[in-house]
Length: 544
Image (cartoon, rainbow, N blue to C red; front, side, top):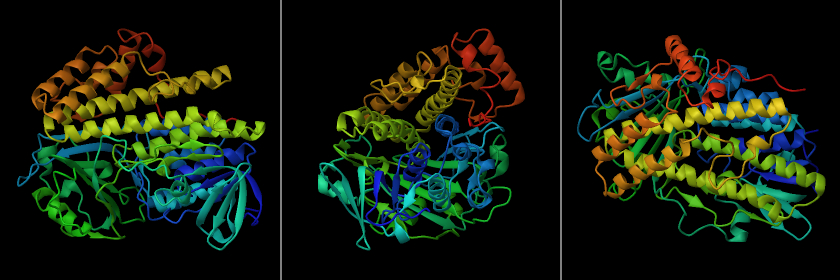
């Protein structure tokens, strides 16, 4: 039985049947928690993250091993996904960044492409099908859905239980509620904790939709000018320009595709681009009309779903935890859908929140202090993501800055993935998970390589100064490349410190050079982190 009886009582009610809500419900149900999974009205309309990076995969692999749900590994290694989900989603063979100047053709010397190693399986998530798959998975592991999937109407938190009311008039009861229902959350409204002014540095006007007829970038330019590049449409492509970016994610680029659409997400500085029309379609056409190469790519494109648009996309809740409630994922905050952080943070929060709720179910202690460490981690993840986005906005002002910033961001993502994989392997060997439950005053919940946090701080500081106008773009970029050159943990084979090395391919020769570096001149910790096993992306087998 997968449907809840009206009036039934549960340990935890999870509001929101999107990826974050359904995966949390699956983990809790797998470990004996009685879970009610409730649809929220905006679940299908809300635009959410659609891309992953290798670090995202490592978080999913960690969820699969720690909580004994083998299917979770498939969210990081897409070959194991059900065929309908895999075929309607896209592949991600590269991360591409191309820089545009108003009124000019895209200059090939202002492009960067990082190709994903062949054993990885990063992907473009077609969220309607992916979220439905995650919901089905939660039911398979024992979560219960509201009868007829009647959506959320109201939430009332009492001293001893929480009442969840749905639109057909039914009421369900739970000891605790996790609210991931988003900006329209009735609990958010009752608590009156949404910040009038978001506690974020980034401010964006965002326009997002799915389109048909998007011409791949490689068909809009002279290929010989990009001879080192692989087809841009086979990966996540971000078009950058001063004060904004346009991310294009193809769902029709796999071996056996059935989905002709591409995701198109435009984010601009609302002050710099205050002249754009109010209508999202008109605003989009006006903006791309300023860049000739972009105009060609979208000349035959048409929106296949209503635009999701906001002149101020960012939101935050001032308080996210209380007695018998926790504001989670899209209810707690919203920021730009860029650099794969949306999906990654959802998986990170499942990992952080699930063990605490499982223990609370066993002990019967649902008090706020038990959940406050998780709330603080969520705030730190939100803040770290915002710092990356604010730095990206500053870097969008000049290609030299973006060329430097993209390497810092990728270095962090790669080393975080390797660090988490190493930590997970040690946890499995030791039979305990305390090494991935670290609660510092930053966003790292496992130990990163020594010096990485400091490099990030200094690089982000340089970008902040460039964005504020207190340091020139040229000076900031030069200083960031110098940081990369001096850092002992930056593998020389990557050539991250060389601004001329704008195309990255992880060949067999480079892999061997990496292993040689790890065994000889690399910092000691890399000699265990950069092993042959850690440089592949095959998920470990599930524990039964």
